[in-house]
Length: 93
Image (tube, rainbow, N blue to C red; front, side, top):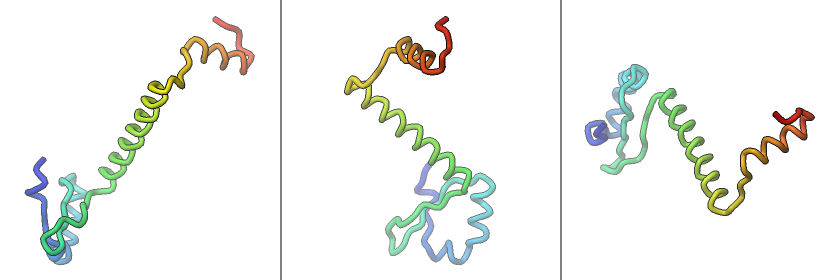
């Protein structure tokens, strides 16, 4: 997607807010809003925003996991499972 095609001044948003929101709700691409010729905000529909936030959360978890691996803060799966089973009182398989 080319964001250069979706750049509008804030005056356009003010004059066409209902149409802009309708377009976003129908799956339109995000809209970059400019003020005095500079990008100031990105407007997107709620579903896309939520999906972006969920993706960011997963990426953060992956990054934290990578740091743990690099720092040696890991436990072999068999050992972790054995500890969990012992804690729950479940016999080993």
